[in-house]
Image 1 (cartoon, rainbow, N blue to C red):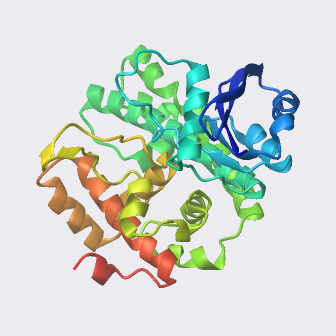
Image 2: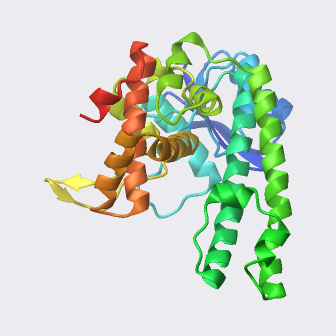
Length: 338
């Protein structure tokens, strides 16, 4: 008899449910996050279990790797796409685990990508770099806002990175206000130093695979962003069409339609936030250094705002990058901005 297992994984405990092919519960239990306990619970059903569906938002490495090494076929659930039907009277972790097993048995479980274990460390290091870059940007924007508010003078982010306390005090007479700005200089410089350390480590340990090398021809994409995209994509062949890729990059509008009429928005969090960030970074660089990209951005901005315009440019670059990776060709700006 075939059996199907669902595991609802949380930070300190998991709920495990095993269902038979009639969708009847054979075994279920709430356990601590201990691989040996979970494997021991499943052992009597090892030969019958067709697959295990694991749902987790962040802490799945140890469980998925351990179950795969124990010989089980594991399916990582796409958490954002596996929502239970609206209107259910009652749900809890026990019912969630049963639900995962049901979806697996029925062949409709929305699955996430189980990234190869040996490549996760560099990918996660580049994710940490992205986190630090965003933090540094928030410091820069905060300092720039405070400075411009008190002086009426415009300044660039590049200039801010070279500031010292003395530079600020030349323009801001109020010592307390100056301290409010200069207090962020040291943590900003510390973040910059850590970012450079991570970049050196990533470049020393990782190399762009041949199929991703053409990414370096895409406007706004340098070595670090190319590595970020490569490690987040994994295998470009898993995206059947360019629309699937840009949707995964969170660069496609969400919508729900019925008889051609809008019925609210879709799930905007379904996709990869790191690719979304990477292509937005590429768009900012392209806008600064390439005239055709700047004209496209300005044309979009004339109809909307800066954020929507830069996201539109990011969408363009993501579409181009898909073809660059899939077809192994160099970036063609004339084709992109015709």
